[in-house]
Image 1 (cartoon, rainbow, N blue to C red):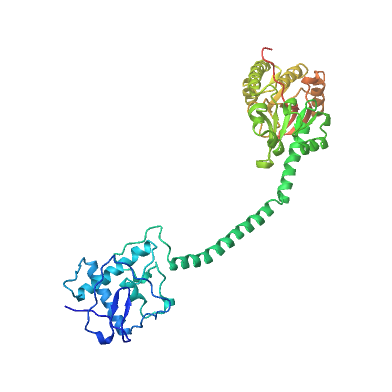
Image 2 (image 1 turned 90 degrees about the horizontal axis):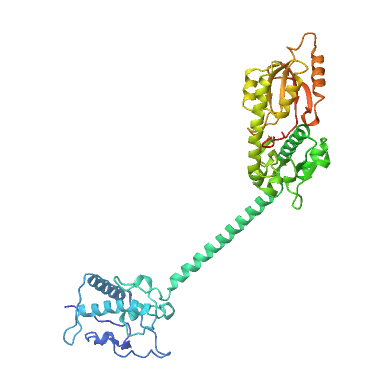
Length: 447
C-alpha cells in the first residue's frame, strides 16, 4: 500500500493547522492523524514566516493525488485509516473530505482557518496576496459533488466583477437608447405639431366653399342656420342673411334653436354624435370626407323620435297629393315620375304648385329630384323638370317660361318656387326646372 508524505524544500518542520510537514531529513516518518471537531488552532502570529514554496514536480504529484481522490469519491469508494498508520488511500480520503468541506463553510460565510488540508495545499507556492480570501472558494477548485451555496451566500468576487463589467456595458446602452427615443419623439412631435400641410388647408377651404355656396342657394333665407364661426363667415360672404346665422361655440345656444345645422369638424368637436343621433337625423347634403367633411342636416327640435313621427305623417299626405296629381288629365307623367308620385317622394309644396299650374296650361313632367348630394332617402324631392317641347301650339320656349312664372306667382309665399330656370339634362333635353328651398316643411300629424 502506498504512503504519501509531504516534503518541504527547507529543513525543519512547520505546523500547519495540525498537519506536520516533515523536512527532507524526516522522510520516513508518518503524518499523524487529527480528529475532526478538535479545537481550531489559533492563527499564526503576524511575524510567522510565509508558507514554504513547493517545487513544480511536488505540486504536480499532489494535484494528481487530489484528482485521483475526486474520481474515487465520484464512484462512491470510501477508505478508512487502520492501525496507527496513515496509508495512501487514507491520506487521499482525508484530502477529498477536506476539499468537500470547503464549500459548505464558504456557503455559511464562516471563517476558515488553516486546519483544512485543502486550504494549505491551495495556498502553497503562492504569495499571500494571491491567496483567496477566507470564506471563498476559487471557481476552478470546486470538487465534483460539492454542496452548492444557498441563495443567501455571499457572492463571489468573479460574479461581482462580471456584474460590474455588464453594468458598464448595459447602462450606457440604455442611456443612449433612451436619448434616441426622446429625440425621435421630440422631432416627430415638432413636425406633427407644425399644423396641417398647405395642400390639406386648400382642400378644406375648397370643401367649405362648396358647402357654403350650396347652403346660400338651396336653404331658405327665412330659417336660422347654425354653423361654426368660419362657416358662418363663409355663408355671410355668399349672401346668406347674417341675422339668420347662429354662431356655435362653447357658450352659445345649441343647434336646436335653428332649422338647419352645418356640421363641420369644429361643430363635431362641440357636440360629438349627439347631432346625428338625437337632434339632426336627416341629411340635406354632404361635401368632402374625413376630417374635412361637411354635412348639412335638418334639425329636429323635439328630438329624433318626434321627427320620425312627423315624417311618417308627411309621407302619408304626400302619397295622397301624388294620387290626386296623377288623376289630373292636364298633367303628363312618365313612368319614372309616376312611381315617385305613388311612393310619396315629392315635396308637398311642389305637388301643390303643379296642380295650380295645370289650371293655366298643360304640364308635361320629365322627372323629380333633389339638388343635395348625399341626401337621406327620406328627404322629399324639391324640384320638378318640365318639358318645353310639347307645349300648346303657338307658344315659344320663352313664352312658355313666362306663362309658368305667371301661373305660379299668385301662390302664397310658402308654396311659391324659389326659382324657375332652364336646364339642359345630361341626355341633352332642355327642361324648365321648378325648384323649392330646403328644408321641406313636414305636414303636422292629423292634418
